[in-house]
Structure formats: C-alpha cells, structure tokens
Amino acid sequence: MALSLCFSPLTSYPFNKPMISSRPKMSKLRVNCVEENSHSRLHVAAKSRWEEWISTAASLYSVYVTVGGVVACLRPSTFSWFVNAGPTSYSLALGFIMLAMGLTLELKDLLNLFLQKPLSILFGCAAQYTIMPAFGVIVSKYLALSPSVSVGLILLACCPGGTASNVVTLIAQGDVPLSVVMTLCTTLGAVVLTPLLTMILAGTYVPVDAIKLSIITLQVVVAPILLGSYLQRKFPRAVTVVAPFAPLLAVLTSSLLACSVFSENVVRLRSSMVGLSVSSDLSLFNRVKAIFASEFGAVVVAVLLLHFAGFFVGYLSATLVGLAEPQRRAISIEVGMQNSSLGVVLATAHFTSPLVALPPAISAVIMNIMGSTLGFFWRYIDPSDSNITPEATDKS
Image (tube, rainbow, N blue to C red):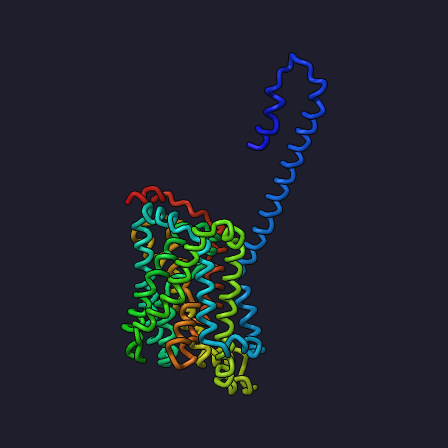
C-alpha cells in the first residue's frame, strides 16, 4: 500500500505536458517515500528480531528450572527471600503468571476454535482429569509413598495442563490451537475439578477442604486470567507493548516459584541421604540404588512415572478414538504436562507439611525435561496421517 501511494503521482502525471518545474518536487517526493519505506522495513525487521529473541528465551523454561534447581541444591539460602514471604509470595507469583496468560489470549478466537473442534477439545479435557488423577493414585500406592508425598503427587495429578505444553506442542509439530484451548478449558475447570478430585482421591490420607481449595484456585487462576482479558480489550495499545514480554516474565516467575519450593525442602532431603554420602564402602551402582530408595529418590521416581503415564496413555487414548497425529501429539503433551505452579501454591496454602509441595516442585524440572525431549523427538518425525486427516476429525 505504501509503494502504490508513493508512486501513484508519477504514474498518473500527464506525460504530454512539460514537467520542468515539477520534476524537482517529484524527485524529492520519491526520495522521501523510499526513505520512509526503508525506515519502516528496518523498524519491522528490528522489532521482529527482538521479539524472536524474547520468544526463544521464553522457550528455555526447562533450562531455567534446571539451573535454578542446581542453585537450590548448592545454596538454598539464595531463594530464602522468596520462601520467607510465602505462601503469599507463591500466590502472587501464580497470579502474575495467569495474568500474563490472560494478556496473550483472545477469548473470541478461542471460542471460535472451540466451535471448530468441540469433540477433540472435550476429549482432551476429559483425558486430562481422568488419566493423570488415576495414575497419581496408582503410583503413590505402588511405591508406598508417605501420606504427605502421596497427597502432593495426587494434588499434582489433579492440576490442569501447564502453559509450557503450548510451546512443546509447537516444537513437536502438534495442533497448537487445540493445545491452547485445552490449557484454558482445564485451567478454568480447575476451580471445581482440582479440589473435588483431590478431596476424593487424597482424602483418605489427610482431610481436604475442597471449598477452600476452590476459592484459592479461583483467586490465583481464574480472576487474573479474566483481568488480563479485560485489560486486553480495554487498553489494547498498552497491552500490545507489554504482551511480547509476558511469556518470558511468566516463565521466569514460574521458575522462581518452583526452585523456591525445592530449596525449602533441600535441607530435609539432605538429612535423609546423609547416611548415603558418608558410606564410602558402597560402589557407585549401590549408591545410586540407595539414593533412589531414599525419600528423595522415591519422589523423583514417582514424578517420572506419573508424567510418563500421562504422555504415553494420553497419546494412546487419542489414537484409539481416531484423532489425527497432530491432535494426538497435542493431547499427549497436554495430559503429560501439569500446572506444577498451581500445585505448589495449593500445597503451601492449604497443607501444613512442606513435603506436600515437593512433588509439584520436582515436577517443574522433570516434566519440562521430559516434555522438551519428547517435543524435539517428534519435531523430526512427519506428523502427516495417511488414514485420518484433521479435516475428517473436525467434522466428526
């Protein structure tokens, strides 16, 4: 459009008339147009470049959590300023993460996507709140976990899908719109389903106040998302400036939240393994075996098994109902990756034992490593499905 406007005086000028006095003006106009176009192109290129950098930085969630976990192990006091302000600091951090999510979501577009793929979305949400809670109970009973750790694992399993799943789905060449809508739907449904399922499945270990959990979830999850959506409609220009930074800030805040809870339990975990570190007569294999037999090792194994079951059974169930390959990948990743930050906040705000928050905190590291690995594995496999096409699935 800019080029046509700039050059339209030249093409429409009557060539059969003398142009002696007008030529300098036309030349100047052409130079100005070329300069404006070059400046605009440079501005767009520069903007797209730094936005790409921010997007790349936001996709390194697993790196931030892993590095933070190492720092928490070596120097737990690094996060003491954040831990000492908890659980208020944890709730505010999760509220900020959800606010950032609300700023980047167009509810109208998501509603249209829901109308386009209702069966896929409903199946994915049902898989989220059946597969993971069931395996949370199975794994905790199979490994004979302590009551506090069992409650933490079941609470994690009952949480909605995490926002990191959207990035992993993009890497895996999955159905990204389906992943985004599933994340939003399961997050909104968490107000009722997460407290209710936790009360039913974990109530045999400790008393669970479902109403209190529901109120906390409403305050730190749903309210910030709706506020972000409102700000997006009310102040679109301001949100356009802030929105590119929202995913990165949310990722950094989520990493801080997970690593802080992990650092809070490091001292306790060290004491449980102190006997293993001083036993020099054990071989390397026996030491590793003994570590996994400790309380810390049991939590790591439990979280590994839970997320592996989510990825595998989520993909298998989507295959059995006849969904296309991109949708299978999206559902597998969405089911396997939980909102561990919500699990941390609910655990610290509702339960007295700090061990309840340990599975969600460790999950933030393990889940993202597993999800990123799966995403990069699928990245190099063509998602095309010769038997079932996405169009056929949507019509069904």
